[in-house]
Image 1: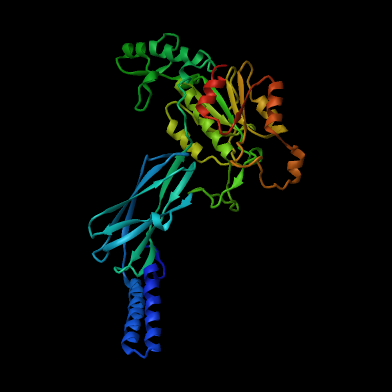
Image 2 (image 1 turned 180 degrees about the horizontal axis):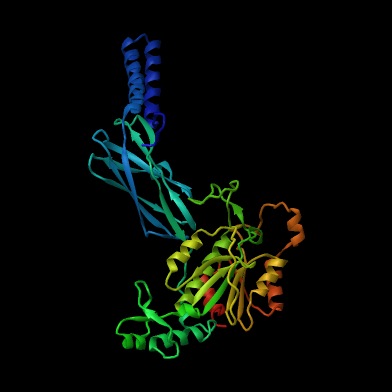
Length: 442
């Protein structure tokens, strides 16, 4: 065990102590030595068994398993905790409770576990409404309860586990038919499947290569599997832009407690900010990228100022979603995104922007490319008539950059710049919006 707390009486123990003191008082008033002795015995025994918990040894090995192994934001996951006693002195019934970064399990949610030397026992916890992120689950709190239930002592077991919660990706089913990706990706894929002769750059098949890149005519000619080196000219790509500056999301608020897990920086710690509208935007961006992947195309996910957030390759969706699990408001993203390719479609999901961000977003559209902007207005909290946020101090650099434009102003400016604008509410269904607004149809 890592550390142990001070033994404390339970509710039952407090009742026994109070009853013992009352019996002593009644016996003293009635001059009844038998009652005084009985009450004193109750008090002494309760104190003795409470102190005895200090000497009770509990040494366990803890293992965790999650189902699914990666959570999805807003959904539930089941955690199974296996507790294996180490040594013959660890036995008896205990109650266990997890320490969570995104909430606290109440004492009533603790699970009873019977510790038997040499045998692992399990406890099951269900975590609801998971927040996106990379979370540190644990350590495990173990309550040692005295056999009569009058005292307990809480100890903390060594070890924790990382649990990744990725953004929700909605199945839309339009990626394979999207006109926004152009015919290039489909023609290239069909050409690869047909084994055309006008792309002779091939190499031998290597483990992990997708079968869609097999060049069948070259395979027949060489007598072994050959694949097209598409990286010579690159897969057709799309660009998704997402705003990550907290000031642009009017419902941004500090987390209490911070929901970050293993991530840390050398800078002074700050309380992370969360926004329901931003979470909706992350889910939207992830859904569009995966849909584009269904058409065989790569996706570059970037910010309005051109910083790279993540890349989505149709063959590495898990890695892409893990990257998005780490994305936070006001993240410092140093690497620049690659320059947009001609005719590369752009889909942006933004809310409020500063003027320079808006200008950079407009410039991110390559020549001949379709451009769709989903401008998000945070949903109003239930029972309120307006959306509010704490006042934010404005420094000199912010004043020089100009005020944050409202979603309505951003939408109007993008329409003037020739973008197709879809105005959305963060309570809208992501899949239905993509299908209804034709985000992938331009």
